[in-house]
Length: 225
Image (cartoon, rainbow, N blue to C red; front, side):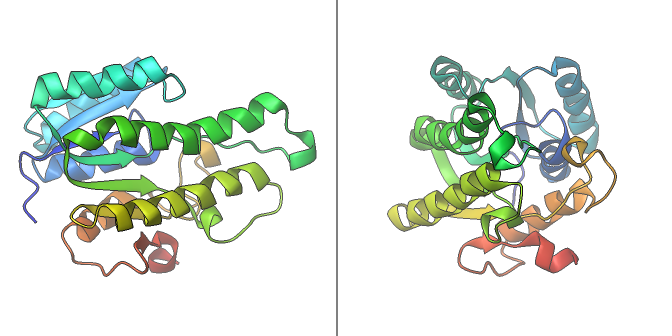
């Protein structure tokens, strides 16, 4: 698949895995929509690098994935700028490092609303514009439960279930999840894990059909480790 001039909306792309995904598509000369919640300076830096790498257009949008109006506005702005969305990549996510008994209601709510509810809502809002596919960033924790990550694990199991059902409903679209293990980002204090650029590169290969998808899921950790 030729990705030149394809419009790619990536949530949570001012840093981390989302940033790396943006660069991977920029190298393919795609048009990139970068979204951020609070890191506007990070988003600007990502935009500049995407343009340097060959992107044919970059739009920056503020997006609060927990706010309905913000979701609708972001999707509307993409339509105004580019006319449609080829790929929606749902990457925005958060984690709490507390064991379940120590998590507040707010921490529980933030993880579920960001990792799962927001992902589902922006997919719903963007679906009429999506021409090619939806890629949802899940996690190894969406396959294997981890002690001390109960709510995060629940949200990622939910992402995988939602994606599999969505793929059945829309067989003409390319819909799959990407499940990394630990990735060297701010979430992991940059101390250990896979280089986020590796995740971006595997996504490009999957989109192009160069990597077979097992049950609609790209298990990056199995390829890296």
